[in-house]
Length: 211
Length: 211
Ligand SMILES: [Ca+2]
Image (cartoon, rainbow over all chains, first blue to last red):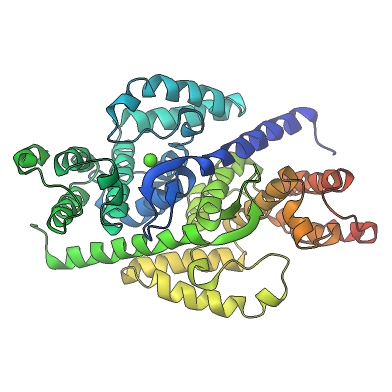
């Protein structure tokens, strides 16, 4: 190799990170694939929501830098390699989720050269904080996608975990901050899911859903 | 719903496309996951190479629009839903690959509204043609990644398909057009794979590998 050693060490660190994150393909989510054949993993989910952002960017509530949204979605679940996937409807899993994920981000992004570790940490923190227009839109697609999976598998994962309409509406309501239009779509889909018997109705909670 | 029907139809088409491409998660590649546990699917592979492009963009031979590279990598394998994954070292699979993939692009991207169908078709064609700086760099990461998988699984898929050093060097040489630095890395890795006994040596072909 005719390259300066410093250059080589930088590339070796980058490759080491890329090899390490292959493990995201072994992190299972609660949702089934749309054909119902197996549970989804977090790597293929990250791909799917990145394409979703690309296709649905026109509905973002505020103008977004799509490139930033894509980067955020590509890296947002990498912490699950150490911290695991925390199910949206599992309060017990959320108790120490923030600490576990922060430690995971430190270790995994820390495999990279310092400048890139800082860049990817910042993207992950921006997603996590959910305050920028890009982070809000990224959250919107991240929440809309599981709804599509649940609807098309006739609510399999909702039923398996005893999730009801009130819980789903609560979770889906966060889509509105990133895209009112996509929230309206999601809200209508939740109602169709209840009508179809995929999701247990909780009529009393209906008012909470309007942000 | 308080939206004009045309808007709704547009969104329905976009959602239909997003539901359809879930099937990319069922398309198996020849390569194993880096932990060797199972074969990789094309959706998680697309995620992995998108992150690779994000991390290794500094090595692109010519300056690239990273956003365009990411979009290209996110959509480049979607045609495999209809056309299947054509193994890099299978000449028979390549005979009608172009026709099968063109028909697949027509059908699958055609699920989208016309403007987006044209946009994603153009991205896929740009990748396929491999002529722009972005397409060349996208090809470079798409060819580097399987090398990492093969190296870290001790050449399992090379051996299973009787692939030798000359074939791998031929394939890897295309990385140079997108990144001379990454090609040097890949070339060194091929030699290490031969030394480690993961890949069958073909000493006579060594000269062909220098582009
Ligand atoms: Ca997610």
